[in-house]
Image 1 (tube, one colour):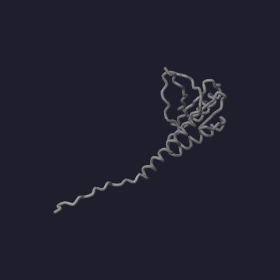
Image 2: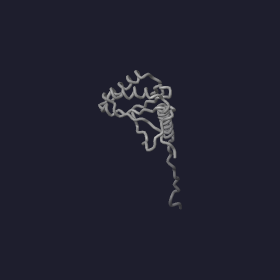
Image 3: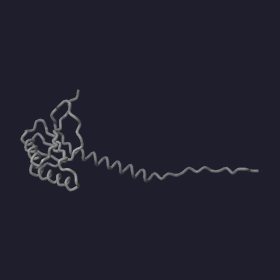
Image 4: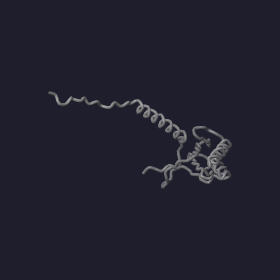
Length: 142
């Protein structure tokens, strides 16, 4: 006489497809973000300065090459076009109710570049009442 039936244990099945989809979406997201951050950082030889702080997240990064070219997000532009772009950025901040005076601009300037371009940009930013301007430097190793 058999008192108990032998019960078969069934393992719960897990569908892996949604997890694989999420992993691929994260992979694409991080690849895209890394490409955008590379565009903002043109290859420049920055001046070396001890005791500098790390770069904080900014709204606008302006690169100035040795030849005095202005590059923003991988696109070369004139000083006039840069001024228009800054005005547009200020209007965007005002449209969403944010304080336009909180716009932070980082200038990444090649240390061999002529300072006239930098002076023009800083003067234009001052006229637009952009007071948060940072100059990026490279902290020497050792």
